Length: 97
Image 1 (tube, rainbow, N blue to C red):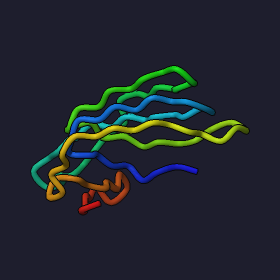
Image 2: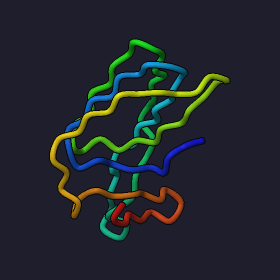
Image 3: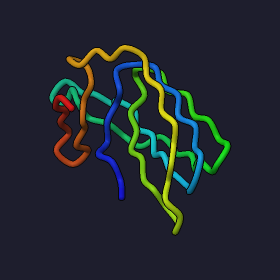
């Protein structure tokens, strides 16, 4: 199972408690005709005990991997919902999420 590619428009903290979680990170790569274009820039595998800090401009996709259920503790600051987006890297679009 994986989330859509998205941001949170807020700071965030993720602490993995059980299972494994793969975060793939993306970065805006706009052009004049494609202002919402993104490109992949890396990833990080979280295992129990790992903590991931996110800033408001971080774009990511989260995927649960492995055989064990993934359980995490997530804490986010106040979200600016006008700037919380879901990205489509094929269509080079972003929409409210």
